[in-house]
Length: 92
Image 1 (cartoon, rainbow, N blue to C red):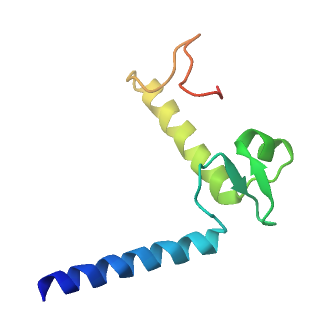
Image 2 (cartoon, helix red, strand yellow; image 1 turned 135 degrees about the vertical axis):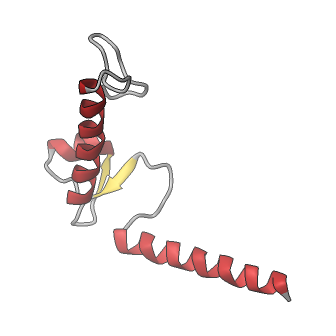
């Protein structure tokens, strides 16, 4: 009986997650391609930015991260990158 309820809740969560994904027009996948507002696919943030086609949400998320790093640097913690220090991944 108890297991039944857990399973139902899990299904519910899964469905809700899928609905949210559908709203975003996000098919999941590798996360290397993203959709703009027009539903077109772009390879990564760089290309989307170059064509000015990045969703406002993504723009804001990136701003958040950069702002947080800046705050850390001001406070003298790690997080702000030093001169010549690179971040992991292809983009810098």
